Amino acid sequence: MQRKYGFQAHTGATCHHVQGIFLALALLSWWLVMSSCGLTVTVNPSEPSSKPSPEPSQQPIKVTVVPTKPVAKVHPTPTPVVLSDQQVAIHFIEHYVDLVLSQLFRRAYTKLSADLRDREPYDDFVQNPNFTLSKGCWNRGQLHASQAGKYTWVVWLEMMQVSCVDGNVMVYYSWVFHLSLADGSPEITSLGLYPTGSGS
Image 1 (cartoon, rainbow, N blue to C red):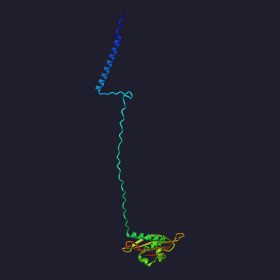
Image 2: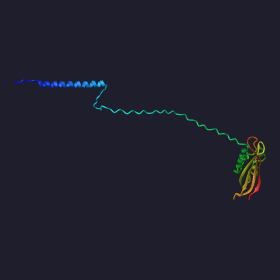
Image 3: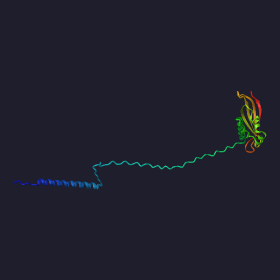
Image 4: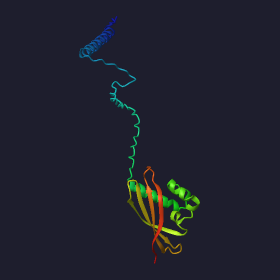
């Protein structure tokens, strides 16, 4: 009768146990090596083992805007123009002549002194060529001024009566004004229109 030995079955089980021991020792040794190196390995089968390092984030630069108060515009104070007595007298007569040539006789009449207005009523004033020129066409020339006293000036203006058709000069005149600046405001105290020559 043949004996059955269980050597193969026992031997196979023993081999399996030995392999398991060796595998456990290998894992233990690997774990000890990793622990001694201070490394921690985490295996996640759903994600790759290594992740790319994130790019350094750029920090926004903070700019502080400080509102400034509106600066008020400073307008320079205009320097008053001080006219000499001669300039005042010349400008005054120029204005009077402008009023007469524009036939603004009522305004021109106010430039006469009170005494002269008393001697020359307005109705006579508008008809007197010494005050308002005669009807026709006129051109004016140069203006001159001379001081006659502390507050009095003589201003004369070259005037030309010309043809209203061709502009030729018919008669030359000198329009002479006497002014007073005694009261601060100039006024005409007397005047006269004097012929000085005839045209060609």
